[in-house]
Image 1: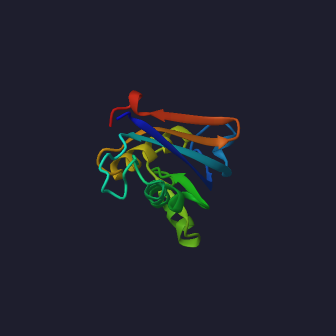
Image 2 (image 1 turned 90 degrees about the vertical axis):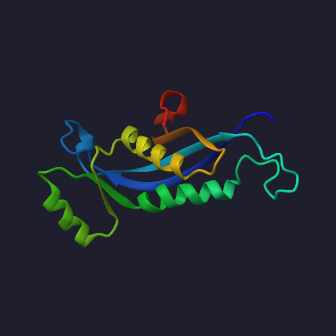
Length: 151
């Protein structure tokens, strides 16, 4: 049977700032992100299985991505923790619950790399992450492809 790719779209609102950056993105600002998740696999050929003909149930993909990405990042502020800002950021977290401190620069590219690692690890056997595209704006996005990034 042929390998098939499935894609599901997700959206979430996130604010971030790029610590130490020399452009406008050093300021706290937000985006309406769109994330396209593509997985690939061979559809189940067991006629007695409830998943017969499926690579993966779209509902299962939705659950995985919501748990790992959307529920965590939606309406959150993502900031890079550095030695110079840790105390300040911990105080910010005391005031607002949805402050997510990361050890990397929260660019579209770096967030996408983290999402890829997490999503790939959570997929069922026989299903692999093929591609992720993260749109920061309607005109700007980054893409991660499995063929370029062996996990």
